Image 1 (cartoon, each protein chain N blue to C red):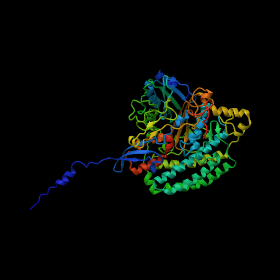
Image 2: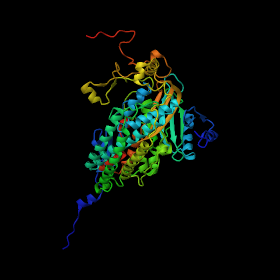
Image 3: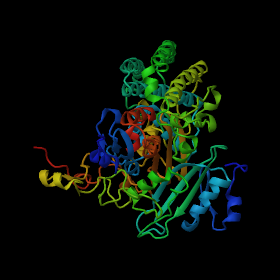
Image 4: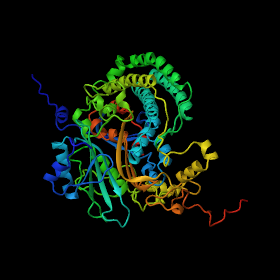
Length: 407
Length: 209
């Protein structure tokens, strides 16, 4: 006798799909992979991100408001605290912007010092970026190597500027002091020992199976998106757009130096890593050229009397310099009215300063175009469809600094 | 600014409202608010200024008309030239400017920042919220009348505020950052010192106990 079976339970299961709920996850602001105080409000479907909303501003200090309330030279220390991983490069970008306003030409020696320090800052910034990226993707060793090298750079910075971290080295119309005796030789020695170590560091990641699994094809940014979202620096070049202001609009004498601009092919996290690695090699190349033909002469503009603080020994012994120093401190430098916009190719991307002057020693408006701010604005698009662990890799590959993003 | 990259003549032909703007560096134009999107689109599509480098605002202080100016900096990814486009907000009391989000995705966060800091609205923006300050913050800090020290404000989280009684307080300025005044130079005014310092030439320093 045939038995008829019915499956009422399975029939019900085959009907409407199981109801699932999206999970809301707050990543940060004090999560180690968000590199500072970035907070991502994620909406998850299982492990997959369906919505990502970056919440920024935790480190907002009102730098632009502060700038409107102090003289041009007084603002230099605040530029240290934008991208605090590469303060020397920020100092330089700000100084050049204000020098454009003042129509000041700095001498060749000052330009060479600035290029040298900016490239050292680039190496230091990329070293940290790489080390942190390594940790994010589970490669702890890289961090130990990069921080050892970074420490050597900080010793050099300390010898040059008196500070390891917040250097405040540039002045409007020059740099704070000349390079110490024998310093160039020590920079050269650093480069000599750095290149083999860099190869070693990169070899820990470049063909590392785990690292490649975590980064190849993750967080792909197309050329069009990179331009539309205003990405700059290694993040833009990783997407195959060969824009580098050092080449395109050379400033501070970059046109004299030979270097290549590395670009990526697919625009994924791995490409951004490769670009940073190659940029360090190119920076060493630039540094060697700067040292090889280091110009003599003054390290501040001779005609910057109304702007640049006179040497301290002169202030204490000469009436003229004392008055000049007094006027600089009380009134600030006398600037012409007008507006300028200057962008420099910093380690994190293009750092821009838009200075609006009504004359006098204080800017009427100073807008800081922060590369990290623009680079992060692509996150809502980039993270959708990625796994939570991919978000960590994407953040590491974007290499941002919240001090600059939030200003 | 070289003749090869000058776009002002070509633009003024198409848009008679476009006027050159005084500038110390890049080519700069003034555009009325109504035409700004068309001008930006033309610059992007016909003149190769395809990269929105920066978007910001200037507050010319209370009582000035027009009070707010929106400034766009565009860069060409081919010629690497810059152009500055400035547009005054017609209404100083309720300033607004058409949103450029449809042209560049980058405009999204820049416009949110300008809204946050200056209170300028961008009709057409998909999600105009504060970005640096918290939602519900009552002031626009980069307006000129906003004091450098800040103003006392309620905490964003009402529950925490009720529990702790804490507030966001103004920064202590006495002996604090040296403060100079912007604009015209008047030595007494411009002398950099904390403005609310309790003693100066006119008032004696309180005796130390």
